[in-house]
Image (tube, rainbow, N blue to C red; front, side):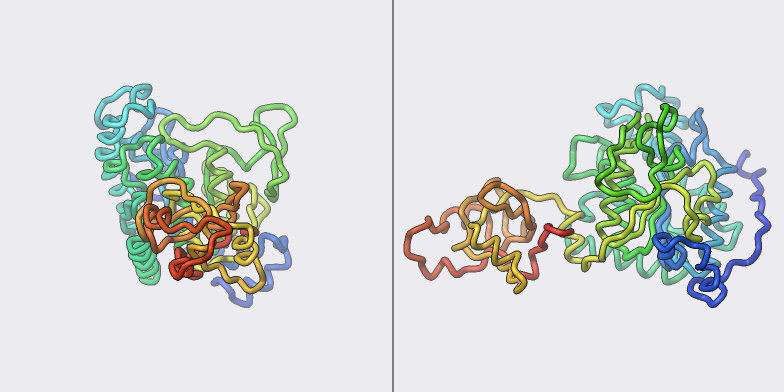
Length: 409
């Protein structure tokens, strides 16, 4: 009944110039150079957490969601492609099922959290769908698990689908499929640590130009904003020391997860801003290049395969190589092929096509790649140093196109 009475208020605003238009170019004079790529961003990802879409009692913050939807509609009308990553299903499901908040907030209570996710996802999605439909925008539900990123084939299917949806003017609404992943923070093979990391991987994998991580604070501060001496960090760099406060109760994220996710996205070539989601007009301000929140400037964008190997996978073992092999792999010739003769040790059990960490003899990781032989086959054929090399020593363990060098990324 409450949804039937809902009416979305349309904000009155001047029409915005299309991305890359002459009028938009003229307005660039008021944008700081480091923020200019956000003003020009064609494909953008917006992530909203549980605290943004829900009230303190766990009900949907309908007015805030309505304003959020209008802001995303405005981005589409500017000629941008928009993807939304939204939390909130577990909290909504908890209310629908009548479960106590402290019970569901316990990460060890996997089954109840799964049940809440199942009951809440439909409520969350139907609310978004109704709101977007009233504004003439089509949205689509996309539920993702960690396995969709671990598999190279499924990763490609996912990114291709997101490409097609956005090209059709559809806004994909993305969430982790908590019903089948278990909502547990301990199972890193099956789940994302939180939707912050999910949004970072989606943004990098979908070749997004900008990512807005909306949270319950204005920006990343040197310490929790309520503490004396806390200062907003305008542009983040690794040199900053940040004192972290508490994370949200029904979500799995906190400021530490947002910083980690923002750094992953930025390393993947995505300009990222952490800002407050309580004022949803911040979305338009972020992608107009205004100086709000904390900016994580993008690094040069690696190719899609490098991004998958670096960020979307978890390693299943370790391959230790000789110093001579490391020097060759890091040389200007970029010959990153790993031969049996290069290998001095193997840790862990993995099959062929498994992704492993490549380390030097001091156990420092400098590369990551996909092996062509399983761990047992490599161990059986390792050539001890000082012995004559056999024909097998020239066999390839990793081909160069299956290796990504981590140093400098």
